[in-house]
Length: 416
Image 1 (tube, rainbow, N blue to C red):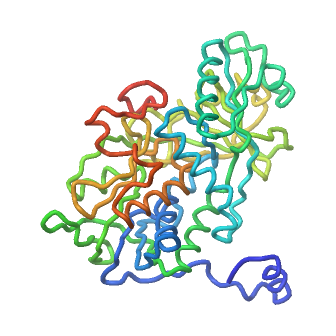
Image 2: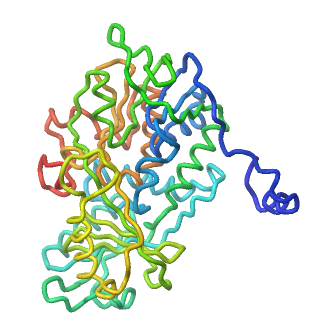
Image 3: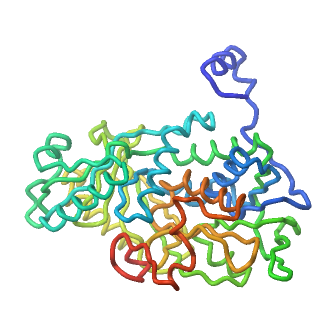
C-alpha cells in the first residue's frame, strides 16, 4: 500500500482496520546474493538502493536486535553538509540532496525539517576558520552564509552574547541543514527495501564468517548458516567485532556518545545551534523538548549509556551558550556506540577478501550521511567500484598518508 491522503481517509472510514505491517518478518533463506550485517540506517539504506537503483533484490539484512535498536534510533537527528575538505564536502552534499527528496522517494513521512544549522564563533581566529569553511562550501555549490553578531542576535536573542569568556561574535549558517525524525528514517528504508523483496531478519546475530580461498562463502548466525555471494558490513560501533570474524583489523575505536532531551517547552529555538567554544549542539523537537548533545565520553565502550561527568560537561556548555537552560529539566538520556576512525572520516571500501565490503568509521557524521552512505555503498557492492563522491573514503588511506582530518587533530579517535 502506498501512503497518501486518500489512503489515510479511506482507512479512517474503516476504523483503521486496513493497515498491514510495514515490513515482513521472514525466516532466512539458505543463500542470498548479498548479505548486509547491520539493520541500522546505513544497512537498510544500502539494501533499499541495491533493490531500487541497482536491481539486486535477493538481499538479506541481518540485525541482532530489533530494527532501529542501534545508532539510527539514538542520535540528535541533525542533517547538514557544512564540511571543509574535498573528501567530505561533496559526499555530505550528496546526502543532503537525497534527504531533500527522500520522503517522496520511499513514500514515508520522515519529518525532514530544513530549519537551518548555525555554528557560532567566539574569536577572530574562529571567524576566519568559519569563513574558510564557508568559502569551501560555496566553491562546491553548497549554501553558506556568514552572519555577524547582530544578525545572530536578531535570529536568536536568548543567547549569551556578553559571556566574558565566550562572547558570541557571529556564526556560519547553512539554511538547508536541519533535522529528520530518526526512527522514521529506519522505518521508511525498511518498508521500501522490504516492498522490493529484501528480507529484513531481526534477532539474528552473526557469530562467524566462513571463507574459502580468499572469498566469503556465508555467515554463521544464531538462526543457522546462511550462504552469500557478497557480504557487506554495516555494524557501526560493533564494526571491529564483526570485522574481526573475517580476520580484518580496523583503524577505528568504539566510544559512547550521549544525547539528551529536556522537558517540553514552548517553541523558542527554530534552528539547530552549535556552540563554537565547546562541543554542544541543540535543537527543539516538534514535541517541544530540547534535543542536545556534546562530546563522546572519551573511553572505549560498547555500552549504550554514558557517565555523569559527560552529563555535567554538556550541561555546562549548554548553559554557557543559553543561560536560560539553568531552569530546564533533563527528561532522559541515552547513548550510541560510535565507531571513531583515526582521522574522523568514514570508510566505504572493499577489503582483503574479494567479496567482503566495509562501511564503518562514521564518528559523529553517521546519521546525516545515511542516504549517501547507503547509495554509495550499494554502488560499490553492485559494481565493484566506488561512487565518485566516495573515492577518497578508502580503507588504505591511513597507510598511504591521505587522511581526511576535518578537525586537524591527528590520529586520535577520541578527539574527532
